[in-house]
Image (cartoon, rainbow, N blue to C red; front, top):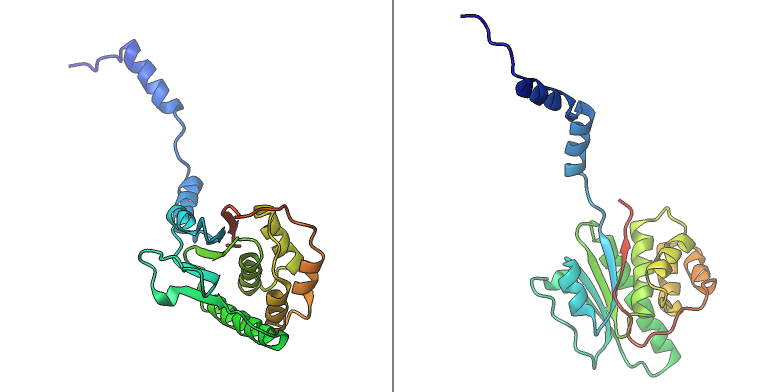
Amino acid sequence: MGQTDPTPQKIAQNRVTAARPQPSVKLLFLLIETKGRHIAAMLIISSLERAIDAFDRHKPTRAISLLSEEEEVPVFPGMTDASHMRLYVEQESCAAAISAAAKARAHDLVEFAKNWDGQGNLLIHCKRGVARSTAAALIVLCVMEPDTPEEILLAKIRRAAPHADPCPLFVNYADDILGRNGRMIDAVEDLGPPITVISAPPATIQLAA
């Protein structure tokens, strides 16, 4: 029996199939590479009032709470004590005590950041989300991105959080601990005035991949 000639409909269908773009080998390798690529973590800066909302939205695996002893530290479901650093701002009564306490907090924060492998998001909050939390964010960024100039890291924070007004004393001690030779505090002092907020909205900052 002779071979039947293809119908016009079959010819048209074959043309459509042939014209349909097929994935190239290069594209397939790109998709595989992207699927396995590490996605950079985020820093989330928040006020105490909005810390739980920020946690629910961004699902951080670690957190830093900077609060006074009178303020209630939020509970983040599923987060272990080892992953949740609590730094209390005590009511120091003299300049020497204030300085010693700030230095101790800066040391503890630097060690916490050094022990972070950059996996998962990190939430940092204080009462208003303006001074202590943004100072802590700068310190963490300096630990995680040691080769990036301090003013660039601080500019990244200010773009995400126009209200950022990092606590100079906190930054100054971290600068000394990290051996930044005054560049961290210089960046803070050169920063322009922030916008005014009572309770800052959450801000997110992408770490370098």
